[in-house]
Length: 140
Image (cartoon, rainbow, N blue to C red; front, side, top):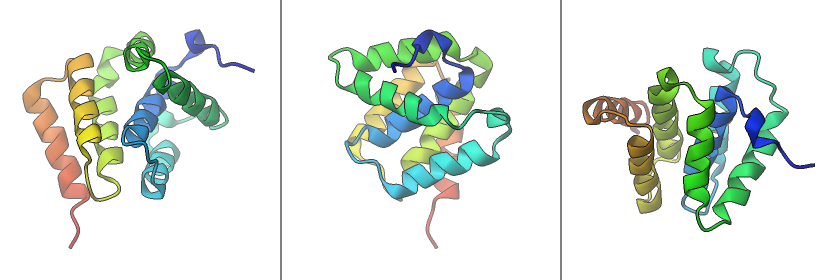
C-alpha cells in the first residue's frame, strides 16, 4: 500500500523533516531515533498523532531520497502540509535531531541550511534556535 502524500498532516511534515535530517548523512543513529520518538511522545504539537503513520512517513522520505529531485519534492510536500506558524518549530526539531548524536556532519549542516532557506527562517531566529539546541546537547 502506498501512502497518499496529499493526506499529509502538519505532524507528518514535522516527522518527515526529522527523518530527513537523521538520514541525511546516510546513517540513522539510535540516538536520533530516540530523539524523534521522544519528541513525538511529549510535545503538544503531536497530541493525538497516530503513531502508526510514522513508518509510512519514513518510507516516503526514503523513497524521495532515492529520486534525483527528491529533496525538492520533500520540501514541496512539507510546505504544502505545514502551516507557516510551525516553520520555526520544524527548524527547532530538525536542529535537535541533528544534535542528538553529539556531532553534526557536513551533510546535516547543509540540510539544516536548506531547511532555513526553504522555510524562510530569519537568520537571527535560526541562530537563536541553533544556540538552544547546542545548549541542550552539550556534554558535561
